[in-house]
Image 1 (cartoon, helix red, strand yellow):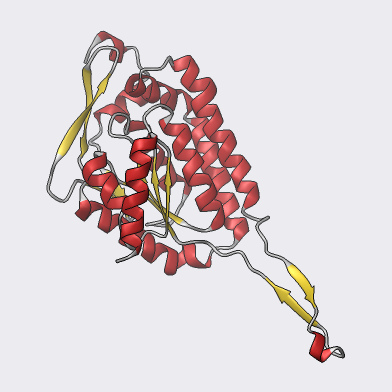
Image 2 (image 1 turned 180 degrees about the vertical axis):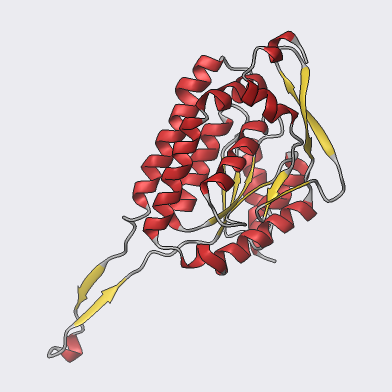
Length: 268
């Protein structure tokens, strides 16, 4: 452990020393083929951790878990007020672990811890609280409609908002924790389930957030986190036929690839 790492809090050092696994169906898993990659402190090029290099088999397991959680179990029947409560609980946990999350973000991403604390962590907690409020305020419309041939009758038409299903979320390296909150918050508020893939350069804060998701009390399979590169892990997620929506933030070039994979997946 280098001098820079020794300056970290005990909580952050404890997180770095724990084996890194992907979160699939409420369990921490190695990659199906055992493959790993390393993530480094960009300031010192020191290895921080070995992380599973997920591939298509891992993505499929995560999507199947998300599909099962969406269609069955406690999440399927959960009331909007319960989704609100869980999002608020997650926001509280992000805030309670702010210093640790800021340090993880700083050493994995390279930004100053002061910036990570003020923008990334504070912004993530604030956004999760904002989206929590929407969970109970999503509604359709009720309209009086005219049917000329039957004038003596009155008709009402209504629409109902329903969750789209399984969301695949692919986030970039520059604001990993904040981007994870931006993807998770709206999807969870609406009742969707999520498979989140952080950038391979900066996977650590997403994995720590996954621990907080479990601590908050989310049912297994509602939030899944797969780690790996874009070519194998990201492409498998974008093109999976059982993913109902892809949320992607990144370059235009990669966005075109993600869109193409999603279109081909939808044709399967």
